[in-house]
Amino acid sequence: MAHRMEEPLQPADEQHWSHPIKCMLFLWKVRLPLIALPVLMGLRRLAGKDGLAMAGATPWSWELALVFAITIGTGLFQLPFSCTWWILLIAAFALETQMLVGVATVCSLTVLLAWYGSVRLYPHAICALWTCRLGKAADTYAGSIPFWVWQVWDLAVHAAPAILMLVWHGPSIGTDGVVRRGTVTPTALAVAMPLCLVWFWSMSLALGRAPWKAYFRDTNAVYQVIPNIPDRCWHWIYGSHIAASSLWFALLVLPAGAARCATLVPILFGWHVFARLHFREDLLVGRTTFFVAAHIFGAWGLYRTFAHPSTLRLWVEVVTMWQIGGFGITCGAHRLWSHRSFIAELPFRVFLMLLNTFANQGTIVHWARDHRAHHKWTDTPADPHDTRRGFFYAHMGWLLLPKTQELKTKGAEVPYADLLADPVVAFQKWAEDKFMFMELVSFGLPAVYGHWVYGDALLGFLVHGALRWLCTLHATWCVNSVAHYFGENSYDTQASARESWFTVLVADGEGWHSYHHKYPWDYATSEFGAHRQWNPSKILIDVAVLLGQARHTKRADHLARKAAGRASS
Ligand SMILES: [Zn+2]
Ligand SMILES: [Zn+2]
Image (cartoon, rainbow, N blue to C red; front, side, top):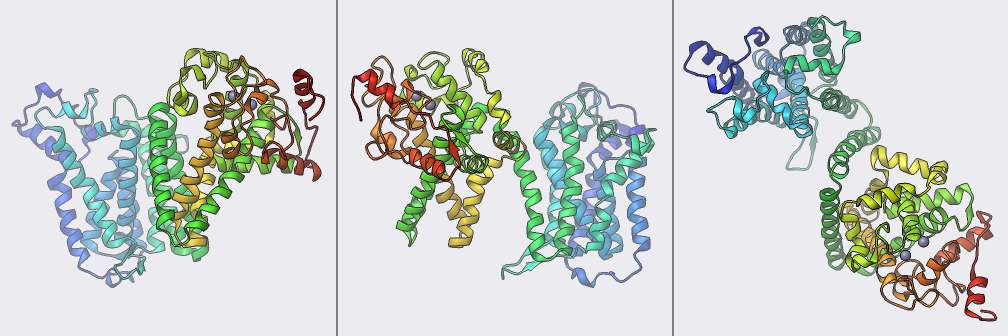
C-alpha cells in the first residue's frame, strides 16, 4: 500500500510496462481501477437517496473514530492527502451515514481548491502525481503516455468525483431559486475542518518530527516533487482547506447577516491571491490586459446607460463621481502630496486619500514620485511620460512599457520619505499592498451602490465603476498629453507645457499647465482666480481653508505678473 516503500521508478526510457511488477506499480499510480470506479458508482447510488434519510441518527462516536483513524493512518503511511479523501469517499459509499458523506463532501471542496489552486500557483506540482523523484517533467516521465491522457485521468479521479459530490451533497440553488443547504451538517463540517492538520501532524510524526516542530514544507517529503514546492503553495493547500470549511461552517451556524459578512473573507482572500498572480509579477502583460479589460467594461457600461430607463440620471452620477473622485488626484496626490503647495489637517488628508483611492491611479506614494520626476526632468529620458516619445506614450503608453534603466535610476533619486512619513499616505500604500484596497474601493463600492440603488450590482460595477474610473483616468492622462501638446505656452515658451482649456474642463481645473510648470508650488496651479480660470480644485482648497482644514496656501501670481510686466490681475 505504501508507495514510499517502493524503489524509485526508472527513468522514462528504461520503462517497460509489460513487466508485471512495474505494471502493478503503474496501476497503483493510476489509481483509476482501485478508486475512481467504485467512488463513481458510490456517488451514483448516494445521489439517488435523500441525504436526510441517511443514517444520521446513529451514534456518531464510531464515525468520528473512523474519520480520524483514516486520516491519521494515511498520514502515518505518508500517503497524499487526496488518498484520505478517496478512502473517506469509499467509507461514505459503504456505510452511507450522514456524517461520513458530509466529511467526504467537505474534503471534495478541499481537493478542488487545494489541488487545482496549487497547480495554478505552481505548475510543477503536477509532477507529484508521478512522484518525479528523478526530476523529470510529468509529460516525459511516463514515456509513451501522452500528456493529454494524464490530464484526462487527473480530471477523472480528482475533479469529476469532487464536483459530483459537491453538486449532489453540497449547497445548491434549485431551478425554483430556492437555496438548499445540502446534506452537510455543522457536525460534519466541524469534524472535517481540522482533518488536513491531523493528517499533517501524523505525517510529520512518521517523518520523525514532533508535530509542534513541523513545517508545512515537510509535506514535500510525501510528494517528492523536484524542485521542492515553495512554502506559499503549502500555505495555499492547508489554508484553503481550513478557510473553506470554516466559512462553510460559519454559513451554517451563523445568522444570515453575519454569514453574509463572513463570505467576504474568502472573496477578499481570493482577490488578494488573484491580484498578486496577475497584476504584480508581470507588469507589462498584466497592465495591458487590465487596461484592455477595463475599456471593454467601460464601453459595456456606456452601452448599459443607453439601454437603461434612467439614462440621464446615470450620466449625471458618472460625471459627478468622476469630478469628485478627481479631487483626490488634483488636490490630493498632485497639489498637496507631490508639490506640498499647502498644508492640510488630518481630516482633510483622510478625505483626499479616500477620494484618491476611489480615483484609483496607483498609490499616492507612487503617483507623487512619478510626478516629481516629471517636473524635475520634463521632456528628458528621465521623465516618466516624456512627450518627445509621442502623444500616445505621454498619454498612457508609458504605463504599458517597462521602465527604462534611466527612469529607474533617476526615479530612485526622487525624495519621497516625506510621503511615507504621512500616516494617511502610508496606510493607503499598506492597504493596497495587502489587499488591493484601491481596486476594492474603486470597483467594489460602485457594485454595492448599484445593488442598493438600482438592484443591479453589475450595472454599478460597469457604469459607476469602470466607466467613471476611465473618465477620471483619461482626464488625468490629458494633463500629460493634451496639456503638453495643444494650447499656449505663454509662461515658458521653451517648455512643452500648455494652457489647455479642454484639460481644465475634464480634470477639475488642472489644465493651466504652462503656468503650473513655471510655478509648480502654487496651490492654484493657475495665475488667476477660479472666476477667470475655471478651477474647482482651487475652490475646494479655499473651502478647506475656510473650514480650518488647510493653511499656508502658496501663491505665485505676483511673480507671474512681475515677469509679464502686468500691474495687476
Ligand atoms: Zn506636465
Ligand atoms: Zn505638477
